[in-house]
Amino acid sequence: MNKIIILGAGGHAKSLLGALESSNVQIEGLLDTQIPKGTLVLNHVVLGDESMLTQEHRNTHQLVLGIGNVAVSPIRKRFFDEFKDKGFVFYTTKHTSALIHPSVTIDEGTQVMAGAIIQPLSKIGKNVILNTGSIIEHDCQIGNHCHIAPGATLGGGVVVGDGSFIGLGAKILPKVIIGKNVTVGAGSVVIRDIPDGTTVAGVPAKYLKK
Image (cartoon, rainbow, N blue to C red; front, side, top):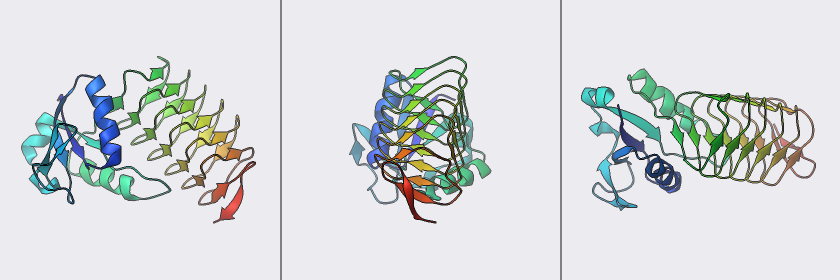
């Protein structure tokens, strides 16, 4: 199954098109409920909305989730789970400019964008975005449905719980544990463990809300 259909046709989908084109896979087109059928997005056509997917597509295509997020959000998890329940497989996207050590494990549907670096023995869960230029140092563990934004850096041995968002340019010091559904604000420096469901920001990062 080497044909790709992208769910969503907005900003994140455009970045994904660049990553997919670098891997020389066959992109069938994009699906979106807001953008009219037939619209071209970077020379790739919007096919319609998700209702056009059939049983045949399950056997011949893989999906790529082209919906991004800029904070903790259940949207990506909801779409991923919905289409997994329908029997679809999600393609694991790896831009050819990303540097990924052979010992790294990456689960289904994760997206490693241009210039990302993943160092030895790190483990990346399902449906994760490792965005442009992010750095994941050795022995990190990133849970399912996380988003590590452009330029963010995780020191060695960092743990990030399911559903968390690490903002643009943020830095997480080595061995810090980030809980589930945590938002780390852009440019923050996290020096201590962060519990589930909290938002932190600043240098050093401080609690904004829970």
